[in-house]
Image (cartoon, rainbow, N blue to C red):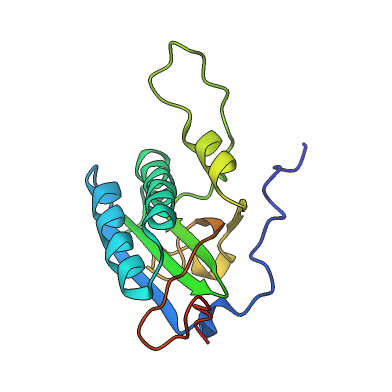
Amino acid sequence: MDAHPLALTAPAPFAWSKSRHQAEWQFVRDPRCAGGARLLLHEHADEWGIAADSADTAALLVSELVTNAYRYGAAVPASTSPDLITVRCFLAFGLLRIEVSDGATELPRPRHASPDDVSGRGLALVTALADRWGAYPAPADCRSGTPAGGGKTVWCELTVIVEAASGSGPGFGCGW
């Protein structure tokens, strides 16, 4: 059996959790999750001083990742925990990292949509717009459907333009 192409794409050894600019939201798995995530991302991007064009790209990325989590990220049926989607965003040194966790253990695989397909282009958009992206399974002891664990996390990173924001020097947006 071949290894999944994303199985080795665990998060980079960067200390994202130490970023001063970070946010986390949880949604009960629902078709409206993507819209809620876009709205919350735009609010935080504005607060963090991310330029409008960069924020729009980031909102599209979070929308695609959350939509995939909604469509394909159902928790294990035997779980008694709510079927949650967790979104985490971190900004440091002009790089925005978006992580979306859900209860399913299967890692995503990009599809090749035909011109007649009405879906199946989400990960192609993520590939085209993000600097890099990947996915990794949650550790076995975290697969209980808890908000912090979930079955997997799909992440992407995007270089963003950061304008002068409160608490950071002009253009730096370092977040430390």
